[in-house]
Length: 194
Image 1 (cartoon, rainbow, N blue to C red):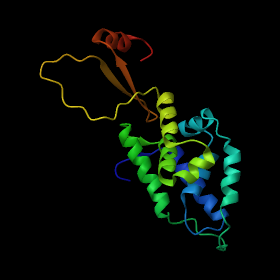
Image 2 (cartoon, one colour; image 1 turned 135 degrees about the vertical axis):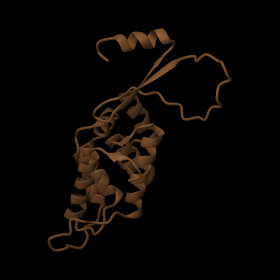
Image 3 (spheres, one colour; image 1 turned 180 degrees about the vertical axis):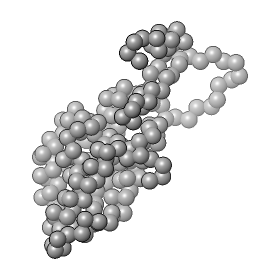
Image 4 (cartoon, rainbow, N blue to C red; image 1 turned 90 degrees about the horizontal axis):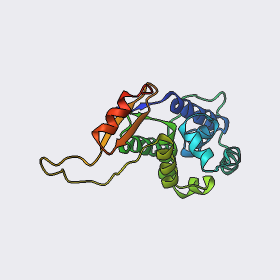
């Protein structure tokens, strides 16, 4: 979708959400089904964010299931269910979040923030957290500081006040390290752990 790679965990979350919709006899996948899929996936940054923010994941899953009304039973069930407008908006917000964080992938952390942004107060109330809290915890976990404000270009010849290195890992994680000067960056790059 639009050049973004969904991680295997996100794909699994979406498959789990589709299974939830089928089990409930629903004809479309909605944001609540995506949330149930995310709550069922216990690994990844999204689950860590929820755990660190004190979310009772089994309790929330139970609450969401109670709120959803059973749909029509569709025989054996068609495994190819369309997404509602709201569920698509979740994915769009997830991609937007990844783009804002300069990530080349969409992970469970982006999906969590997308869910909170797209579904709004209903899911925030169920989870007891906001999109801003999830974003802040995601950035803390990833060790990333980000300033999204637009800045004018520096004057010609001005020396930088710090140096940033962007590290890309094989699992798709991107981490930004900041240094006050070139000597600090050189020392970091020459360490055996890089």
